[in-house]
Image: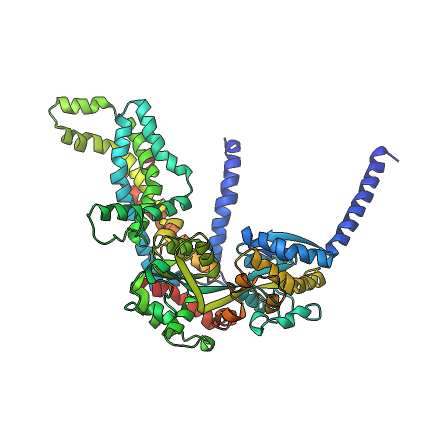
Length: 349
Length: 270
């Protein structure tokens, strides 16, 4: 036997061992995808590391600001690299409709039954929550700022400069509440009525903001006196010492969801991970690091979240009941898509 | 010769021609050939309004950049080389700052409680803060700032080559300074002006971050239509059609300008 052939045989044997090892490793390893930044770092500490330890698996991480097209490609080509994704709830609904996601195996996810029905579906469980709140400058209106969206619309009682988000969602919900629609009777949205109500306030809007950072800058610098903004952004501005306050009255609660890619070889491990991700103690650990609320309300019973912190969170029972819950299902429907497309035309009117 | 070109051609083919072809394909094919994405641009008001606003903002930016850039380039071209370097460095340095940072910096200056309004009100020049930002004005100011170097550099390159002898000759024949400028200097610097104007105009057509941050949501430019179509509506075909339409319009502009003034004379050494 020539030296070359002997070497080749040994190499092949080594390769075979490696392959077998990696196949074994793949069985208890999943790839989790979120949106990166401090958000994903907080998850790593609060949820991903504890989950990996509890399940005895390896959780590889990736991040993507726009995961949906990638998921579509992976499932279409059958080359599944990602297992579990954390995306806006609407994407999970859309993914389910397009056949890109595994149906949940509820036997492996006992914690799912603790979730409010608004936070789960056949193909996804909720993950974290955030709210769009009404925030105002305390140097302009004092502690008792505008209490409702009707106040936001009342330019006589509350003169001042205003800013709304430059998207239909959830600005249409807010317009309807300003027009007197109760928070629990919003859906299906009366789109025409919402746009009519928005047209009333349009001349008084200084800026229609696009990014969260922009909304924070507007209220921190006092460029506007009241604004619709995400609770986390307003919380950060207040922590910086800006003269700003907010409340959860008529706020709009939204959540991101976890879902599993169809055809993943790690289906069972992925489902087990979903169960850990919504486990009360892991859910309770996240709000200590970042301004998002748990979807699993049992997190408030764990004693992990201090009372003062809990009172700031969107899903704290006192805050939860004062809010509207955004229906991702409605926005994913054809009517929702049409309402969203009407936005640009409204802006140019 | 062709061998030398091969790497560049491969890069252009792979990174430009291929993706553009893909865009073109997407814009006309969606479960079968369809002209719907182009028809939509013709039929829906938002597209027409957006294109109109984009072109009018680009035109304003170009004129302002020319008015601001011409004196700067003139000064740089007339100054001794050492000082010319300083002037050009000052023009180019902002280039190294991200467009995003500069947009926020303009917000700090222009907003209601910003530096400029504060100074104007303290001096009693205005009683109410001026609406300098969150509208088309803010967009134009921010964009001119970003694009000014593209006007100054071609102008400077052309002006520096204008022999001072010609100006002296005109003066010695009795022309007043204004007349020398209008009849000798200005025509000779025209190629630089045109080159700069085209660069600024075309680059401005595709601006995204600056109008998004300084436009207050009302100033909707073509790039924002593309972004909304992709991110919000997931209509890649529509986004591709908008992008290609803009590209064709730019080609048309180049073609028309080329008929008036051959491009090789603008960019070339002649």
